[in-house]
Amino acid sequence: MLLGKDRMLILRQGALGVLRQLLSDQVGSALSPAILTQFGARCGSEDHKTLKAAYQWSSETEEMAAGPVLHTWEGIVKATPTCLEKRNHGLAVGNGYSVRERISRGPPASPRVETESVRW
Image 1 (tube, rainbow, N blue to C red):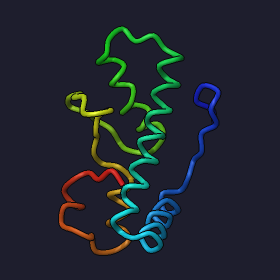
Image 2: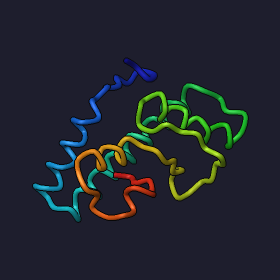
Image 3: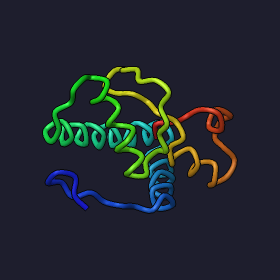
């Protein structure tokens, strides 16, 4: 599957959950979220560059709205944004695979996992 000229990969949710757990076990629970956050940010940044080169947006809002749509297509999150708010380098949308994956692996590390989106 291609996005522009870039090859995209489809991975199983469970496999990514195992990777998250292995990172946590091997490098620690303090460093593993930082690694996965940087990985996710890089993925999103590259997706944005590809889309921006391929399309002419009529507004910044339309350009920002493309992110949640692409994330939904990629299976990263089921995005139904009620508002678009630019934060730092992008915007955060809830109901991602990582929340479900963490809950499915056992008791949450903290109560917030069940009620809030997490980036890693």
